[in-house]
Image (cartoon, rainbow, N blue to C red):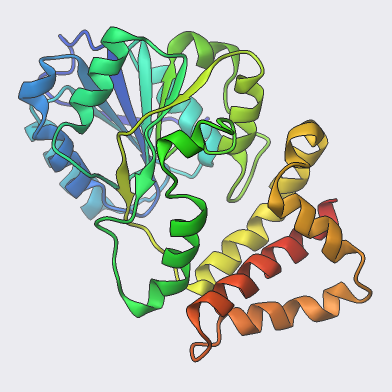
Length: 311
């Protein structure tokens, strides 16, 4: 691992938190999120600390702004700045190694709490129930309505912004490190697999492993996913995720075969010359004059066609 630069605020050293909020980022500015979280400092009464990881952005101006933000916070806070990128799994494992709380809240830097008792709700849940794993869910309440993100918005609303009662029916499926509470002993038993590279599936695979040993609960404590993507950006992420999907299929075939993405990939695999047809699926998804539903369907089809090579 790279040698980090650490920035702590005045409250860090004396803190004895129950919950550590772990926020990784790369080339983002989490300042707005940090401000919103810090507004709850009085309500959580020392139960929460913040640990932020810059996974190799190498932007001196951003680092200086974040150092000033960290030092001004009332919540105990630490900034870890890495000179080069370590990747999503390794970064989250590094955050976990720094955390001092008995439970850890993994929170993406492009999330925004949907209410002003977000941290309090998590801290209260830990104090009352101390769950092994809990996912709070996310929404699009505060996300952009720009036309560029219309397809991603439609796909997220359908597949990710799911009510907690529905999520609880297949608990391992709806687990993302965007708003995820994990108890220390659970993470000690099952850490994120650093073999995952690029984008996607490392959190779902982790949840599959964990769900075989621990109870995964779902609660109603959502935050908004602000980082909507264009179709081109989403397609690029799906292209990165194909190898990760293959890794999950090998490790958890009994669970993955129940997923619609797997079943669609298996069907598409039977199509002759799929590799020649696949670019047309992407082309339809990026065609702006098509209806949003048709573009979203084409993008899901493109993803399944990529995954067909893994099944």
